[in-house]
Amino acid sequence: MASTNGETDQVLVEERSCGRIFMLNRPKQLNALSAVMVSRLLELFLSCAEDSSVKFIIVKGQGRAFCAGGDVAAVVHDINRGNWKSGADYFRKEFTMNYVIATYIKPQVSILNGIVMGGGAGVSVHGRFRIATEKSLFAMPETALGLFPDIGASYFLSRLPGFFGEYVGLTGARLDGAEMLACGLATHFVQSESLPLLEEALVRAASSDPVVISSIIEQFSHAPNLKKNSAYHRLDVINKCFSRRTVEDIFEALERVSADKKDDWISSTIQSLKKASPMSLKISLRSIREGRLQGIGKCLVREFRMVCHVMLGEVSKDFVEGCRAILLDKDRNPKWAPSKLESISDEMVDRYFSKVDDADWEDLKLPVSSRLPAYAMAKL
Image 1 (cartoon, rainbow, N blue to C red):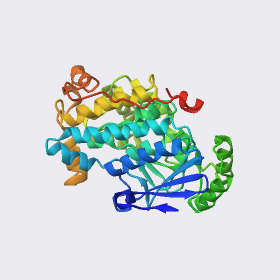
Image 2 (cartoon, rainbow, N blue to C red):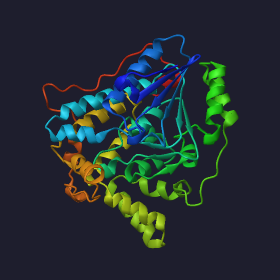
Image 3 (cartoon, rainbow, N blue to C red):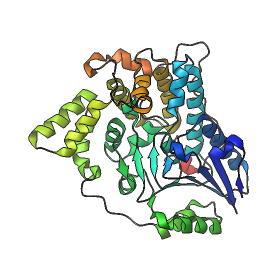
């Protein structure tokens, strides 16, 4: 049965035998995660973990998006009213939800049949099974908003093949379902027309065994061919350029490749980086690099410090400016400050990784569980 109740209509819950289906339900907003949705999802995941009758979770989105990200426009509204701590509360709860999903004791199957961006990746990529389709569109577009890939992205981007994660995280590059499968963001690829049959098969099996669930999904899966112009075909160039130590070095490496031969993909990659917030590029690169050596918990704790400094705006107010230009006024012409990479000192970047100097502020404290499966333990 489907449960509906006032604000909880933003997340619909369907009870199917031993499974629960969570439907993100703000289709007009491309299922962007409101504070209500984050609270509701966290509550649902925690309650289902304790409910022995629930064997598995399916998460999907209503309409043409799985989830286009967090509702950052609402966060910016709070910042502009002088209430950055309301935004901090939102991210605290969201990052806690990301951690619960990453360490979840029961299998989660995320059906990514549409747009998956930012916070939408946080609801899905940390889970056990991620099903892409021919309609999937993935991106982490935060550097164009004056933010950085958060929601634990420094953990999963840093674990993509080679330096593909740096490329995706810094440029905001869009990936289709075939690319998501190739790089590991998705675990399976299923044609969208087969999704109802897949759901029925999972419900009939009523199993919590990941091996059983995987074998069912594989019956509906196939490996699609990458498009001829896929960025994943450029992994050698990406590794050569995005492995460099600094953002400036990455630019220099890309421009050197571009000088050797005319290449539209290289040109568009350089342009994407030039449009991004210089401060966002700097803190994003360092975050992904640190994430390579950290478990999911430490990544989220660090990212929470970073996002609080972003909202405080003491070093740069690029987040507010980026949201104004891209989401609110939509002139797509942000005025970044600092406007150049060379204007950003190491000390400025360091600030984002330090504790917030505020008596009422606390580091992110993540829930402790003694029943973590081996799959989750490996992430710690």
